[in-house]
Image 1 (cartoon, rainbow, N blue to C red):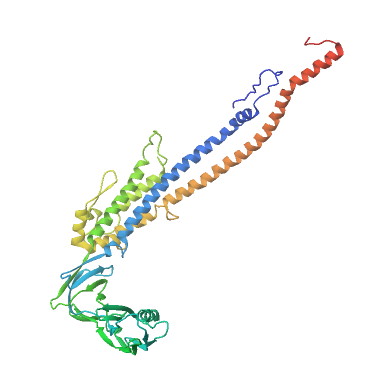
Image 2 (image 1 turned 90 degrees about the vertical axis):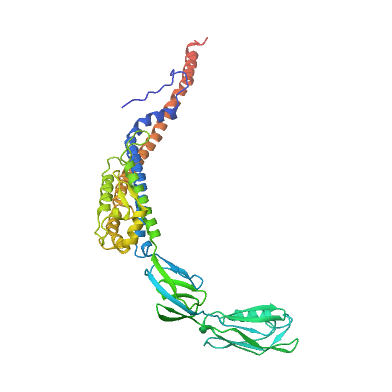
Length: 454
């Protein structure tokens, strides 16, 4: 262990020495014991950062795989088409739809009931009386005209505010302005029954009502089965499929529901990309940093575990019909551990053996189920995952080392206070020597009559 000497020149100079610098020099020797601890903490912190990166990419890989293994995910998505979009337009085909062809004939469109009153020449005229409105089989509601609703505009507002299932508005033409009532419920269930006892107080003319449209249900047949719908938007005729009726036709319209193979292929490509990101993370840790030092996880057993488990996961899982390997899904395992994806091969498999592909991804004991289990056992999202456990072990070690550093810093702080006090006292003594010598000389001169400075 080295030593620290005090350099303060001549003892009689009175200049003393730099206490702060001297204390720092002395304590620097004691602080050396912390360096290995701090270096080890830095190493563990670098490992944690590497584990976090790998864990994040493993999480992305798990998410991309889940899109393929989810029963209601991309493999359940459907597409629909209509042979005559002027008669019937497909709105959506959901996960509950089944691939197949359906024949539909639309014989009648749904209509929404509407009623309007006779025209008032001046829309600002004062009204009187009342109007009774019934929607379908519901109870009739009577709106009585008063000072707050005695014009067409205010009466329409009062009807809308009553919340009786009808939309009131004003319609103007060359003959004047009418009160228009449209049912909020389409089809026969929303048929309006309106009785008017309104009159124009300005002209004394009565406001009669006239039917615009009668509420009626749409009528169609689906694969020979007669169906009625209160709306032209139909979502109950074909499970999982919603379509819009646009016109009637005596000729059958063919609705084709197919599996959405494009989205499945896109999801598989995302899985391959995510897998390669994890593979790159692991490969990086096998080499050196830009400065030539080993990567933080170089030689770490967790790294070897991740590599071996991932490789094994690609080969696990039972066959599903004609599909027994990911290579049949367009995925090739390269010599460097990365994957290559062929969209055309996957599309061909989906087109020819869709259910087998889904089974290979989703059945119990399948490739998808097996790899999902492997990823769960490796990541940081599970308290039994390899990365989670490695980081927990590092955290425990870091806590011990940081406690040692903290305790040592506390001891050094106490030592610094004590040493500073002692050296300040010594420094004061050194700085007082010239004045004390001067006092001695004066005493000597007084006693002997000899002046050493004379």
